[in-house]
Length: 520
Ligand SMILES: NC(=O)C1=CN([C@@H]2O[C@H](COP(=O)(O)OP(=O)(O)OC[C@H]3O[C@@H](n4cnc5c(N)ncnc54)[C@H](OP(=O)(O)O)[C@@H]3O)[C@@H](O)[C@H]2O)[C@H](O)CC1
Ligand SMILES: [K+]
Image (cartoon, rainbow, N blue to C red; front, side):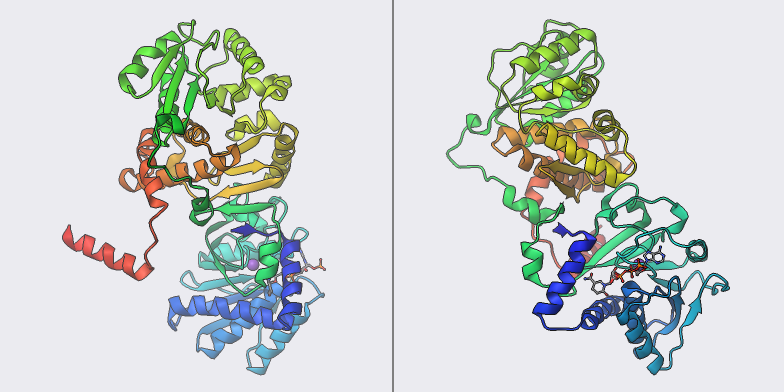
């Protein structure tokens, strides 16, 4: 699913209005009707008080039009105009008039107003600012936002939580609505997925307001979401007349005394993702544990006993994962440097190898094109430098990926794969996956895919999805706290199978759950 910028959404509006020969207020009406239907389906006329806080732009206009539909269906509403500017939009004014025609008189709030009382069990519709926010809100609007939070009422935001910018981070946390739910038009917005801004919403859903498909299909976006629909076409089926050679030989290089488990996790993940052969390359101390615990992998011992000293082997791997649990001993740094000089295979680079690259930036030039780098935030900072906010981070990450022609997987709640100026935002995963070794498993999965012939970019996007999906499947049994990297690894097969499961409609899922409960 594409993630459009604010400018692209405004352009889509224009295009749609022209092509479909409709007015801009007709588009606003579609938006409002969609939100109304969504609420009405859930509320079924419940006599809960709904407070609609509407700005003076088109986000506020959506709120005004929504208020009209709620009133027409007998809902108990109170409408407020958050009067932060004299520059009211035409469609806001039109919908304000329509509301007045129905004898609904909004209360106008400004810097001198006393704010209305809101009950804990009431509902707040937040239509103060939309994607048009372009400067910090006035102090009194910030106070209003705090007042809304203090009520503890459920907050439903229209399009985007008010106070979030589309292209920059949060400067004043008090100036942003914390939404329980966001109904966003046509496509989700980038800030929903970034750590500094995504915390302002619990859940989101997209409402289709019929923006023109021609514009939506033909417009290239800087970001897209990677869900099941997006990754399924990447899947390469296994062939009947294939053998283990068909699926590539992966080499996993890493480990040091006390950190052999990282190589174990990555190698196992690589195997269960489908690599034909996996060889682990470890210091001598890792041979026995690996041979004992993961007999399906072959092991090559480095001349170093506790750390890697040489990185010399006589196989020709299709892909090499390097860095996990490797440490940064002087001899290891030297071995890694020499390895980069001689290596011809595609690379997946993680952990200590990333840290060595960050402190010896000249080495980055020696990476083969399309190497996959999998930094967590701290490792990323060492590579690209400090950032102002998430948007600045993405800009810097894109520049880095361009400069070194590499694929970056920025690990996080929504991992983002960066390549060739574009970002692919992952949709799977859960907080239980913030656990030791989870990253090693990701490295193994991506490596396993490259071994099988996936391009590095596709392996990064698909691998990140599979890794998260495996975590989502495993967590159902373990719970967040007890989820381990091993559980994620063991669920990778199920994540593959899940790709081909057609989701059942919600009512069927509900029935299945009930009959499951009856059985137990
Ligand atoms: N295709 C769609 O998705 C549709 C979305 N709709 C809704 O429209 C809004 C966007 O509406 P817009 O009018 O462009 O912007 P806002 O409502 O967010 O803001 C209104 C204006 O407020 C000014 N502004 C910005 N920041 C501040 C501030 N901190 N303090 C005071 N005023 C501010 C700014 O105007 P200026 O000229 O003063 O800069 C904004 O323009 C979208 O989110 C949807 O909810 C349509 O209804 C249907 C199509
Ligand atoms: K809003």
